[in-house]
View 1: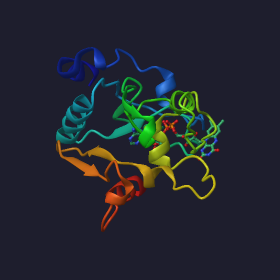
View 2 (view 1 turned 90 degrees about the horizontal axis):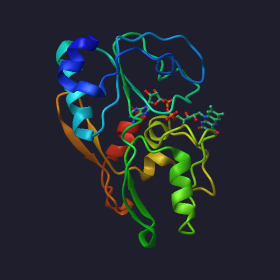
View 3 (view 1 turned 180 degrees about the vertical axis):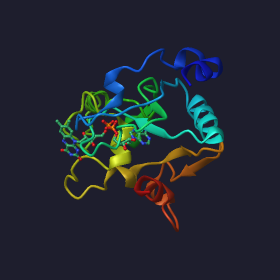
View 4 (view 1 turned 60 degrees about the vertical axis):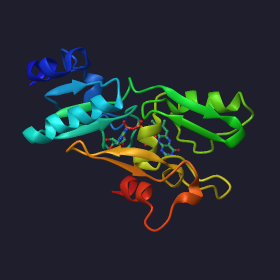
Length: 187
Ligand SMILES: Cc1cc2nc3c(=O)[nH]c(=O)nc-3n(C[C@H](O)[C@H](O)[C@H](O)COP(=O)(O)OP(=O)(O)OC[C@H]3O[C@@H](n4cnc5c(N)ncnc54)[C@H](O)[C@@H]3O)c2cc1C
């Protein structure tokens, strides 16, 4: 499978199967057929479509700090988000930041702190855990009755058949009817 994926996605597909991508904080043993580290959201969508067409299971992976073995694969493709680590925009005046899924929690915390702000969700492994992983697991305590991460999430969500669904909006008040961000995070 590695050779097939490399023909399609080149260097984004690792040659081997590094052991750190086969387990998480639980140290439960996993197995995979390939590890892919896409560089763009478009490449994530293409990998999802490739796997969907061939019925290959996918396990998304953030920092691997999860305590429930959710990132431990049982065959198929590990989709590691490490390289999606760009901060796309940051507007301290509006308390608004747009980051990719693989940005480490600690980097985001540091960045907003430099502008006198605080990123409240506080999972315990900030140097390693990623924003995407935090949202997926709703990690971090609720401080001072602030909403949990999923409530604040406004993001495009990729589905296997190249579908892209916008969940939420930059302004929380824009959420009407079903909160799709919350629905996807909780699914
Ligand atoms: C020392 C330590 C202390 C911790 N303290 C806390 C704590 O206080 N509170 C708390 O809530 N948690 C805590 N945790 C748990 C852990 O930090 C969180 O679950 C973490 O934030 C998960 O993020 P991650 O990037 O490491 O995700 P991973 O472990 O890589 O993945 C977790 C799950 O999310 C999925 N996932 C990851 N990224 C994505 C993505 N981009 N898109 C879709 N799905 C994705 C994975 O498939 C998996 O199911 C702690 C962990 C450690 C090691």
